[in-house]
Amino acid sequence: MDLIVLFFLTSGLFLGWSLGANDAANVFGTAVGTRMVRFTTAAVIATIFVILGAVISGAGAAHTLGKLGAVNAMGGSFMAATAAAIAVFSMTKLGLPVSTTQAIIGAIIGWNLFSGADTDRQVLATILVTWVVCPVLAAIFAAIVFKCVTWYLRQAQLHLLRQDAYTRLGLILAGAFGAYSLGANNIANVMGVFLPASPFTDFSVGGLFQFTSAQQLFLLGALAIGVGIFTYSRKVMVTVGKGLLPMSPVAAWVVVVAHSLVLFLFASQGLEAFLAGQGLPTIPLVPVSSSQAVVGAVLGIALLKGGRGIRWRVLGGIGVGWVVTPILSGLICFIGLFFLQNVFNQQVYRMVSYELTAPALAKIETIDAPMQKLRDLKNKRFHSAEAFRAALEAKRGSGPGAEARILAIAKISDITIAQAGLERLARTGLSAAQLQAVRRLSGRKFPHRWMLKDALAKESRAWHAVSDAKRERLHNRELDRRLDMVIRAFQP
Image (cartoon, rainbow, N blue to C red; front, top):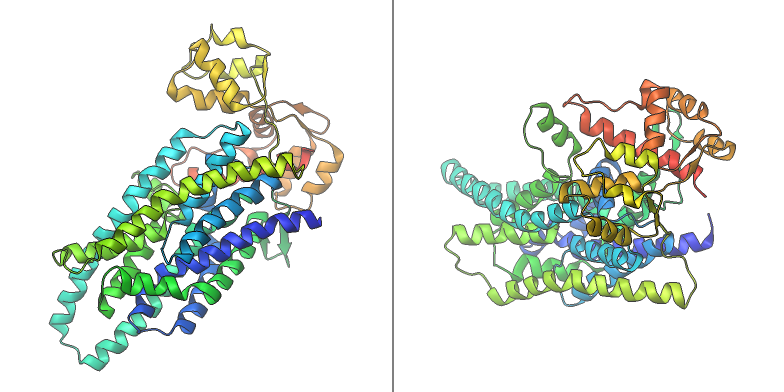
């Protein structure tokens, strides 16, 4: 691996450190603030379970974040992560539990604006909605759990020492679950921007399991989070544990449980598959703000008690931090990209072109879009999503629903199935049937990603998408991940 690649990855490690310094407070802040758990114990448990959550369950939220903006050059990934880390670190210095999610999303949008890349409006809208739903849901969970726990304690009439021991154990268990959920949901904030330009390749560990490129990045990021927990999280833990609302140990446990449940809901691919299999609406897999979740949980308990004791000035400061963080991160990223490209001569994005080729126009005919005016754009090359979108709007050839699909169909990938790429693919986690299907396409060229996908599906059932509700989301998402692996192997 080149030294410049290692240098670029340090920004992700810096962001991971910042997340550990800031967001560990959301897992163990109330426990440490009420002095029920020692800081060292909390730091060790949080680090172990953050790593497990990131490596085992981090892929779901990262997939959605990648749709918002696919940062396709290591220089751009470096700057996006650096901008988010600076924004988070600045707020951490002030002792405010800000949102790492908001910081990285602000940075990605800054990169999109600089590079002319398309910002998926539907994905952005979904993420913005979760910024409202997340604290509200945490408040509801906290109020329900708090009511149930206090009722049980009144009925059980436990001795104070036994109740204290149970509460301490409960805080540790809830903190472990919270740390796992934090790693699963928020590792996308740390390393998600590096996934499209990842320098790693999948490999097999003793033939027992596959260690993917994404998991390798997530492991690095999780280790950085652990370092941040140990070195700099104590101050923010005190702010969360004492600054917003004085809490009893039982209330502290409820806050951690409610916060952890919210993060888990928005990161669990298993839960998503179960709900889809039952024909129920699924919960979007997006990186949500653990800071918003814990503040929402604290407020849920406070409002249940009539709102007494809330320190509104502290809450106001936290709210200001939430507003400022994405704006600050986006500005830092945009300005930093300019200097990185024009002063240091680094590639911060790869140009992505769009063209309505004859196959693309034929494909578009299958969706609901007026075709006559679109044909006026046939074989015209556009060198940014922004320029192509403007041409589509000028021709009035697509409605809001079809526009994103037209962009995806017209995107130029220029894939040539060559021998060198086949050799690289042999060392990845593709199945034998999938590899054989790729080999049968040797020498062929595909201007669009979807054309390669269709050709592979014709060659082998191993590349078929499924429509079975119980398997559709997970199977097709994994299929897309493997297709991206193939494309990376054959692109310069």
